Image 1 (cartoon, rainbow, N blue to C red):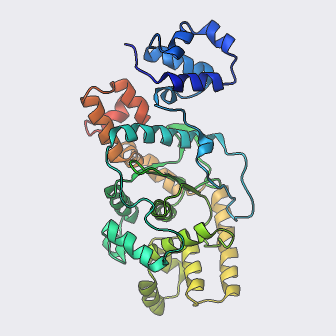
Image 2: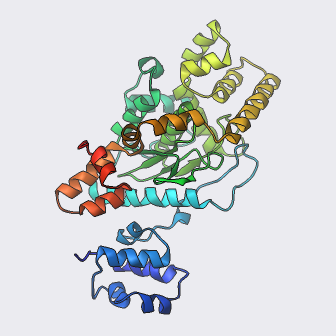
Image 3: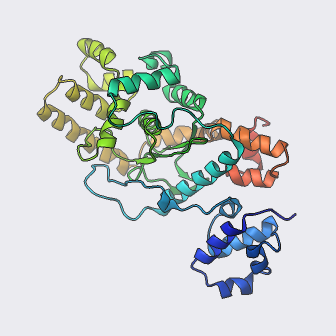
Length: 376
């Protein structure tokens, strides 16, 4: 069965590839007719073209060419002391995968979200945090309501706003291509219809929660971003990250609640467990609220960074990875945004796309699809 494709998208990828057009013409029958729109390719023919120019087939099905450079993102090392260049293929491929999903969703959704870009970095931090809480419908100390799984709780609240949230620790399902926690912890792709937050599942659960909140704040100020810095709050050189990090800290460790808890217990690890954040966040909060001096803060950070390097040396949160691999069905349902799966299923039921298209758009096989739609 032939597909209806955007010929300009196909032409852009073919002409922009590193493969000479003469070579592609010799290997792919009817290539010029496909590019002109005179003839429509089948899925297999499109897959053959994609294979020859070394890109995912899904990119050729989009309405426009995706340019990863159009997402203006800063890449920094964990200690914020340099630029990471170039972007790894794993990160690049993951951004492309999320952009493909976003393009699909934009074609399925009509209404725009009203909260995107409603704040700026010149707004009051506490007022911004309170407005975000109100929009999410969460109490000030929300961790008290979800002691067992605050990440799932907050993810559901973010989903309720219309934001799509994905988790993974590798490129698609390729276990030989793990995502580097040192390169990035998450990113957000801005869009008023289908904003996407991606979380690196290699991080700890508390780390994933911080990244989720951090990237949500970026949506409220209307900016794309990649987050890959240990959450110490050291962003003197960047006003946007200073603002985002402080709002994130207020959402996760609200000032009044934090001050009350610190009266009873100054133990950093205990406070981190109570607020479901990393010890870095607690130490920074203690400094910002004047509870510890700068020298004590620096010593805590030095110790924590040494511990972090040790964890990363042993492949970053092995316990979390082991847990996530323990139950395939549970993990795959958590990795993929449920509303995204819902839109794909509706498209299949309405015969807008085939099952093969659905598997490709989601990034799973038959078994994974059945699990996601609740038929297994």
